[in-house]
Image (cartoon, rainbow, N blue to C red; front, side):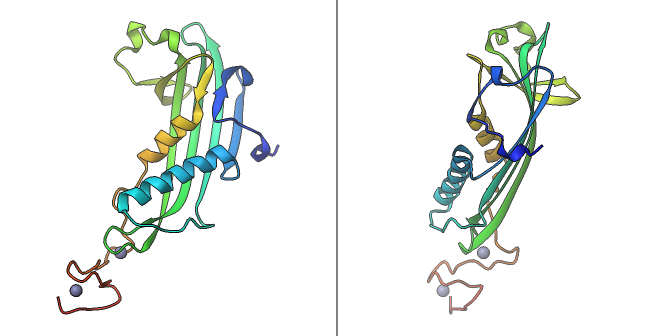
Length: 188
Ligand SMILES: [Zn+2]
Ligand SMILES: [Zn+2]
């Protein structure tokens, strides 16, 4: 089955998923809310380096999401997600501002429980639970809705390269006259 055409909303309604069946989705930037995540990432990087660069064709994001909804006596109606986010984009080299290709490749496993369980003492001190063959980060959903876009954005931003360098031997810009020392020399 071609899973890339299956639609998925930025806010996931639990009742749209069948119980006890893994459900797979593959999404890329042709989905508007997925492209918004990429745009947000690029904007953040741009602000960080205080320069501008063009958003090109090579900038991309792909999501692979596998959901399993279950209903058990201990966890009630809950959702597990196995996900992978791959994003490629250009950041600016922190030394010379040259476009620097970055790839973020994040995998995550999460567990969403109903927010009515949030105040139970067993969940008070933990942020991970081992279930369905994996250690999963614990979240809570309310009103049957999981803020998917928000979660994906958080995971993606964890993978940001804080100080991109276009080449480990980058000479940067001259602090006095600002010329690019990778291409030119000056008397400073
Ligand atoms: Zn550089
Ligand atoms: Zn100089």
